Amino acid sequence: MISAVSTQALKYTFTRKRPSETDNPCDFFQGGSYESFPSGEVSAVASIVTPFVFEYGKDYPAVYALELLPIYDAVARMKVQGHWQTDVLAGFAVGTAAGYYAHSRDEPFILSLLPHGVEVGVHHRW
View 1 (cartoon, helix red, strand yellow):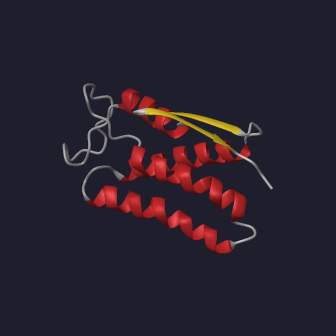
View 2 (view 1 turned 45 degrees about the vertical axis):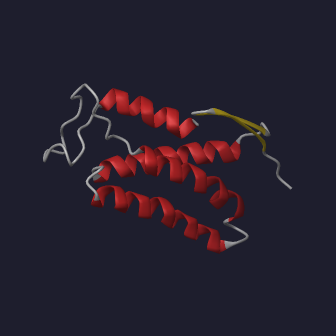
């Protein structure tokens, strides 16, 4: 939820054109419906895997391989000209920060708003 709200706010602020819409990577603040910066997809994937990496990475080093998922998504988004490289790097940073915050919270309850409902969960460390 944190990464989704953050990336959407940044998209509305920067209104950057996608590579499929222009050849100029400096087309920021174009107004309208341009929402390339930052990548919401990469942010979402990074925010999902980051808490697992922080929680289990020391004990199970193979968990670090989860970081390949946002990297794969970033490369895919650039290949289909959906995002510039800086878009996916910023999305990765926002998602990682949101995932770190979610991991380090002391409050055990999770409340998230979804498009068609609400998600409620409990976070507990053994």
